[in-house]
Image 1: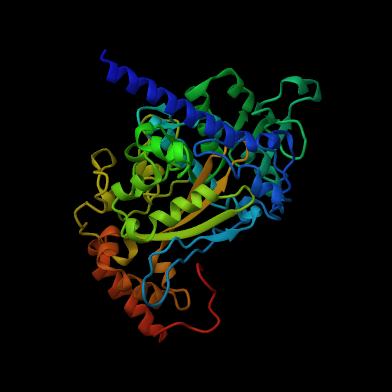
Image 2: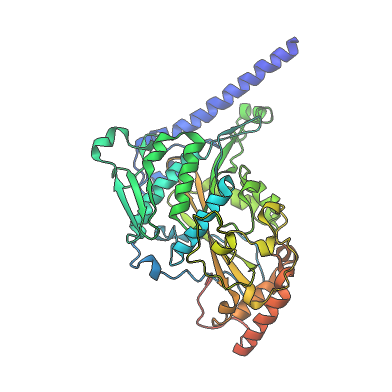
Length: 486
């Protein structure tokens, strides 16, 4: 080795040590908060991880707000009628709104039908439905694996669901004699309000019962994937867990580190590290898992993402506090096969059961719109040939309820996506909706129209909506209508 190369190696090692020292120093500024109870919404909440370096997180306690119990059994809870489209010009924005804690997880009378589909998809798709990635550490970035955040999420749901839906979930807790060895992350027990952690959770509506102690017998990705399988059986929404990354680009950062001109360990991107994706409809988890947030959107050809969304979205993720839950809505038009099938008694345990029996509305995968799932090409949605049976009766509004929440112990961000399918023929009978949806579809810019597959159904859809609006006499916004997104 030449003298020059030896000196360069020593220099790089020194820079790396200095970078590590500075990151550690910033992390230690928040270390005193490890054993501090954080009051939701307080200044402490905002300051605990204020000085953390990118890709680091100090586990913290959190005082959870009171959850308002749902007064009805799930069979009596109607799906929320999201109609997230407007009259007039189409605008591309993040469109996020604050959300009460009691609305974090939305369950309703379709719960059992959704669980039949989710169970079938988990059994037949395997790790294309549930997957957890290990820690990634290469020459460019270090990202923690998703297993710990998946475990934290299961315990969060186990605490939340019986509070919100007391008639549908029953839990048992570890005895106080187990206090010396309770499940925890960063020394913080996986429970709310100082109670002992939950041991079992039973879903009354499906009869499923989960023993969370199984997670203590598994490690790493095996533990994380078992946790995400339990998540699948508890909720109706798909879940992606995003973890913040730390860059190892030492050469590019060396001068900036020494002169203190930039944030050490820059990256701060959020990586898709764990998932339960059983009803995606229009995309495949296998195409996106492991990607950072920006690459997920760019590779999927999301219209005007880099111009209008990338910077604000990454900034929002980076700064997202513990006590703030947010929600946004999105929608697509979907074509399904004509069917009169009733999926109430679908044979989920029988090998001969088919997806058309279990999911005739194509909630899990939109084959009529996007072609066969295993042949789908990422970034080229709505690629199926236009079906000859496109008609008002085979058109559905695919409405998405998207939520974001940060976990206090791991710092992971939970991205939930609840899908709703509404028959266009039924929507068009609601006051003012036919004209509003027609206006919205016509307002899509060219790239949005391609992304949403407008060419496949626009003639049939617009002709039908126009006829309905004309009969109603609707030409614009009507007084007395509910505000967005209803």
